[in-house]
Length: 264
Image 1 (cartoon, rainbow, N blue to C red):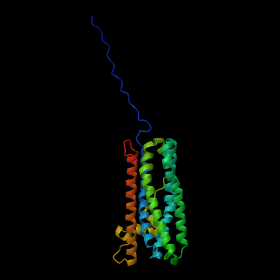
Image 2 (image 1 turned 180 degrees about the vertical axis):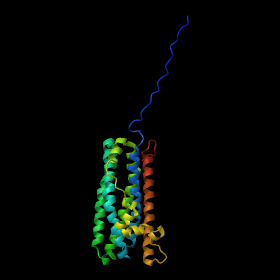
Image 3 (image 1 turned 30 degrees about the horizontal axis):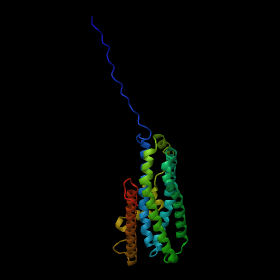
Image 4 (image 1 turned 90 degrees about the vertical axis):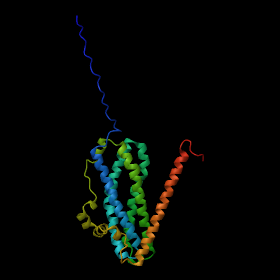
């Protein structure tokens, strides 16, 4: 008698669903973060022009001030009001998902408010000062404060991209990105050259120049302009040196704190 054997069933394959923390970022998240990074690219270009015009403020206030006024206006209308609001919304989502990460980012939120207040103050003082005052001590002080504002803004952006943006992409979920992109997503006015030029004609004209012209080092540049640019170059070299020292000190602190590191 032939024995009938029961066909063996194939083992079921278990398909693991990615956990919310490891799930790939939704396309809406890519769009949102791309917008933030494009904003930073536009902001970097304007910061560079503010640096240039701040160096010229005392020597040629009649031409430097209008460009600076438009640059500060652009920052207040778009970067401080729309871009930072967008980042603050992202902060709120991170806070709900991972409070510990948010605590590390809280200083950046506070800097948004401080930066806007500083931009408003600088814009107001630039508009009130006479040309004579800008050629004197007031112009020297404002030029210094403008360069400090630029440096602080650059440092702020670097920390945002290194800590804040990377952390947000790691912890947020598809539902968070969908909520962040549900409303209108205004674009940087600089992305539309015609619209930008209509609103900020002097700034747009300077930003459209080749790098050689933007720095003020034209063939017919005056000695005053050359000296101002030389001073700015020295300041940038000093800033780079200080940054290198900060990086070195940070590396030393990590070695000291690491298990088996050198004794204090």
